[in-house]
Length: 279
Image (tube, rainbow, N blue to C red):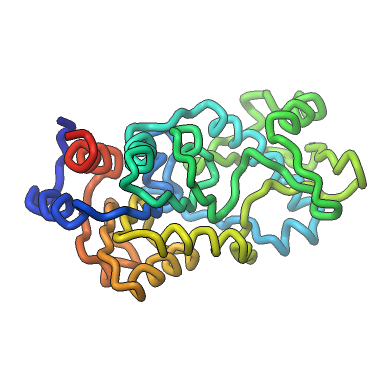
């Protein structure tokens, strides 16, 4: 059995007892992917960043170059990582019929790669790119090859400074060449929700459906600092579902939690799977 270090071992016993016999909806954040090697940009010790807003991206060509230069280098980190035991545990809950699905705030697509079939990506995914004019969708792998060909200088070790969030600061982003849509010449944007945008209605409806069919909500690795996460927790609270939060440090949802585990997500999720579906 996987061992987990929690402040009160009794809390884990209580959590397993609370969740036993219930179908679980999972809501995950950046803390689920840290053990895969993707840094948590809101975790302790992470530098304060000023994420680009959708207004900056759309209105300023220099800002788009800066974003794409950093995103291109940072995406290569996402392309090399693999799902960890926490991702796999959540997928196993679903395959065992004990979960209604996973809603994730992450854009790394690791839940799908771990085997989760019903996974709702609230903030989109870095693995697809969309034209904002005609709607054409491109695979990020294909665009990455084009970006490499257009910007060979970016491979220089002196050209970039990698940040803990997997993005990168590029020394001279003005040199970066950003391709346009092959069909219409429109602006290309990763299929992710930028600051200043809202989660698409259809996406949130899918997420709400995961909660509506569940008997409990488990939040793993999210500080719930972003409104979309709190909305999911509120949907569970309004249905009077038990809410379990697993996160290192406090979250904005702690006052709504039935049980709060101040613990690592990977080991905790793996042990809960041991207790609830592997025994």
